[in-house]
Amino acid sequence: MTNPTDEARVLDAVPTGLFIGGSWRPAASGATLAVDDPATGTTLVEVADAGPEDGMEALAAAAAAQSSFAAMAPRARGEILRRAYELLMERIDDLALLMTMEMGKPLAESKGEITYAAEFFRWFSEEAVRIDGGYAIAPAGTSRFMVMKQPVGVCLLITPWNFPMAMGTRKIGPAIAAGCAMVIKPSELTPLSMHALAAILVEAGLPDGVLNVVTTSNAGAVMEPLIRDGRARKLSFTGSTAVGKKLLEQASDKVLRTSMELGGNAPLIVFDDADLDKAVEGAMAAKMRNMGEACTAANRFLVHRSVADAFADKLAARMEALVVGRGTEEGVQVGPLVNAKSREKVVTLVQDALDKGASVKIGAEPGDGPGHFYPPTVLTGVPLEARLSHEEIFGPVAAITVFDEEDEAVAAANDTEFGLVSYLFTENLTRALRVSERLEAGMIGLNTGLVSNPAAPFGGIKESGLGREGGSVGIDEFLETKYVGIAFGG
Ligand code: NAP
Image (cartoon, rainbow, N blue to C red; front, side, top):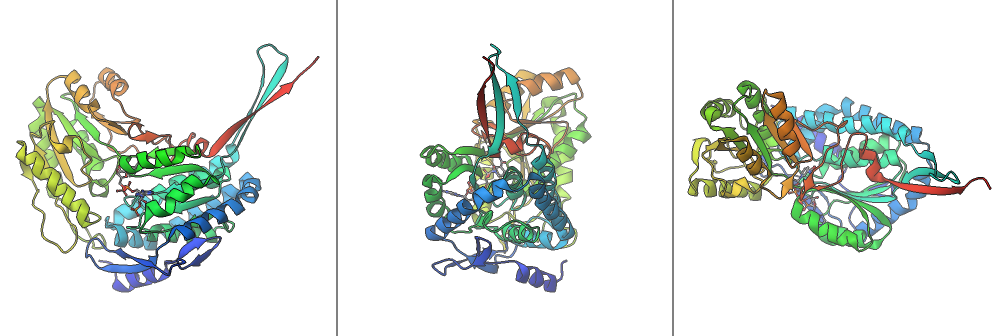
């Protein structure tokens, strides 16, 4: 168990204002909002609650910083990111404690997220100096083409609560590397990790006004005027598909560049030729990371009839052995869900599946608090018409459905408007490649339950989003391509 003095010290150190133009300050209205511990329901701290005028000031600060930051040498921008990476890793224990307190995930998972978050800074510190261009001879030979890449301009970044730091560094890293100033709005549920990150970036040498943080309890009212203003040229959003669609419509007003990392409904297919232990290992990672509160979480387990019972037994044994509790406590592997609404949604989806004929193998009996806990749960015989076959569960519930033929599994896997990630387990190489080609998803986990990697292009197709974060393409989302046509010869 963590020491209460450590908890108080870490909370004391985190800035609680809005970060605008290089300084921390209260909201113009003086309003604050409470950040609660989802394991206890108690308030950890109050932070400034921005209103529309604070948002506009943040945008003005970013706009003022844009041209000088774009002119900073790429190596200097990269070195800011590199220093921030090192500071994140040096302070990982305190940052993990802060994240666990505000979000609920166990300390080991918070450390995993901070490492993942920091790696985006290391990756993009290296990408900052690799922004390239081109030179070509026109087909007729009478002119030349020069292609250059330039920062897209001021960016608006909106991040969710489930990975409060990594969803930020995945956007802030490439924005800094490309030379873009920005306004970021973290989720009101988990702003503290973003505040701590902003303080680290200042320490790493980020110039005033390049990063502005507006935490608010009224996301729509604060962000919509910024999106429609026209000074920002890019909107990068991670969150639900419903909100993403609304933002796309707002962004169309001034034709902003957009990146949308939206919801998922990942199938995890286990074929009869899978290595079952590998499949269970992968299923644990794909289902239980972040208590199931991940866009990449396996939502539907499609298992071949001949191995379904064995798979369910093994998975249930692993899930039942997990220790549930406040994430700050020694040995805890599953923390609470983020709030009462999230837990209520899981309760409703599980009840709907049971009403439609599913059976409980383990779990499905939430306690009555305090804290928003839901036990690891395995359901079998889940009919495809159950709501949890179509909606993100965002909780520790594995819903198993049986199939007989490969075509049937692929059709069921693709029967969703989402297309973020699909997992498949098979030891047959030809089947692995064939099914990977047929699955409609931006990412495939082949015999693995973990696809996230800062060096890989993360993103979805269909209603799971637009654009990619990370990898060698991640920085392109923050760059414009300009072409210079050059007359040549007589
Ligand atoms: P959400 O409700 O869409 O919220 C995401 C962010 O948008 C939060 O900062 C939220 O602020 C803000 N927001 C809400 N309404 C807004 C509006 N009208 N205008 C501007 N901003 C608004 O999603 P969530 O429940 O936090 O996160 C879970 C969702 O994110 C899931 O669907 C998950 O799959 C998805 N996700 C996707 C990825 C990916 O990479 N594809 C990664 C992680 C999560 P407040 O929280 O303060 O209301």
